[in-house]
Image (cartoon, rainbow, N blue to C red; front, side):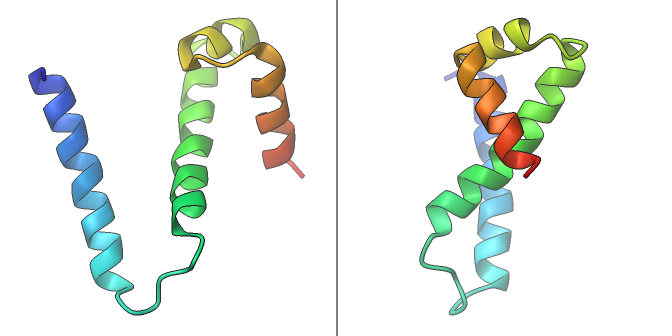
Length: 78
């Protein structure tokens, strides 16, 4: 694993550990869904900013179809 991947994984693990430590005993049953949603939203926003709002480019970078990306954006905005 490259240093970049290790740094990224360490940062994510640190954030998760901090969250779990603060909410110990009060974690929601849908923790996985909640975490994925909270990571996905800023990821999509950041990639859209980086691509100047180009959905096709953003979808390609994210490994999603343009239709799936559009659905995720619309779901977030409802």
